[in-house]
Length: 357
Image (tube, rainbow, N blue to C red):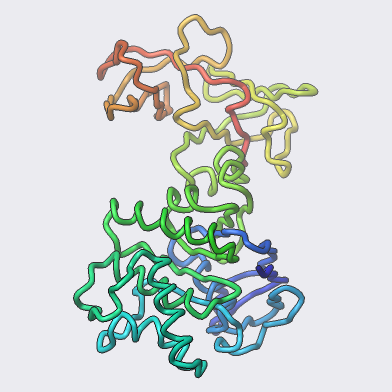
């Protein structure tokens, strides 16, 4: 297992900055995900780790070895591309064996390794199949087997599930995670899918505009977003603009609109936020943080149901409260469900309010 370290890594394309001053350390055996919208720099960062791009500045280390300008074929990384990049004129066996033949391994060794790799991705006995005889999910597994068969120190995956339908995507991500855990291989994964990143990762790096917005576990990223971008990009959230009205040792009170006052914990405030009285701040409240406000005295929001969606597991509401449209999610308990036009009372606990900007 190998650690991967990026020290002040930047990449320019002419005058355009693709990646700006990235500093990360990926632990040996970790499943680490680069997450962000298209054009945020995540694939460029992955390609610098793979050696397809060289940084404009900064250093890339595998363990303690400087790999910044080492060619891709000398990095001992296995890569799975978004479009799989399989050779259509070759069989499954020939595709998986390609990297081993380049390394000039013996035929018996190649046979053994390819068969083992196909068993690992649950495609045993399919070596003689042509690529065009495989489903999209099977082709993805062949690409994964080809990356694993060379026994890389680091596995790189660039949006490998984006071409699969929803059900197959869910099944395949479980297979990738199973293999990663079994092999203990350091894995770097690129995706724009938040649910995918949350389900698979040990840690996530959220990127936007070529810069790191936050690094943390899925729980940290979701429950304690570092800023407005992370809060809105990861799942759904309600962003409320307000003004700091009171600050105590442990709590902060924010006035939102006319009469609404919300009290949160200072421990949930982004450390970069100025808490001076009268300062403008932005609150983040997840839809599932709301509960029935009837009988509650603190952090209660009165509103009118604009939209009610019953999903089976939950009931999702769009609630209008003054100038604010709020999304709230209640777990289905089989009790009364509010309809459009009905009044509703929402409450939120202090520890579920986050000051992000």
